[in-house]
Length: 262
Image 1 (cartoon, rainbow, N blue to C red):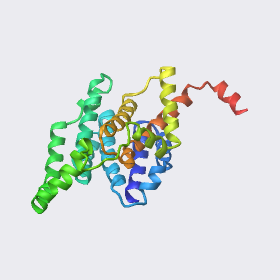
Image 2 (image 1 turned 60 degrees about the vertical axis):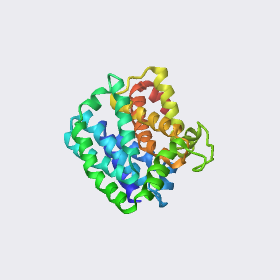
Image 3 (image 1 turned 60 degrees about the horizontal axis):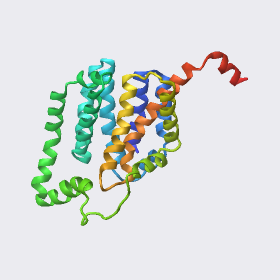
Image 4 (image 1 turned 30 degrees about the vertical axis):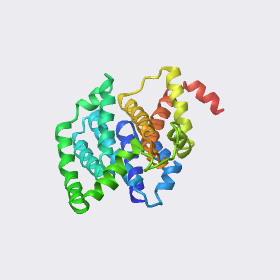
């Protein structure tokens, strides 16, 4: 529950920093009223805490690069280290894949190149490594079998001895539209509207779209699937909707708005 409150505050703060207070407030409300937020705020799994750390890190690094607020970068790397310590190296893998996806596009490339990746990744490794070394010394082969293999590698290779459940490629698409309803439908509408009107979006907003797509594709590739993994896209969904909402309001002529009001 504390992680949920912290994540709501984080979403609001990010929206307020990159846009204005109304965007921050809407983004926080979108995220707070997501069904998965209600569910994960009151059950004892790590997904809420993990999302608070990982999206907090991603958001801090993006805002630091987009707004030249270097102090936020000093917050992003420790949060990434905590995410790695919470659920393992998958947090680092997602962050690196996200960086590669942003570098591919010219408009989002500065969001990555403006950061101190060498020092940041070294910091994450130095902070997170002692925990994994301690666990290795304490549990030895049991850690390799139950965590490194069972909790990471087997999620993608899914040998028959690990799991025989077949969830299908559209499992996370269904989970997203159900777990983030009704905002998932609005996000689809925002995507169609952006494509139809050729609306120009900022590099920061495009980066949020990339994050949503990356998480959906990454976990869909995995052989073993859990619906709570999709929660990583919920904060980005709230921010994207709030930014799209503001753009839509700015594009409506005042005469049309007055007619609709009457």
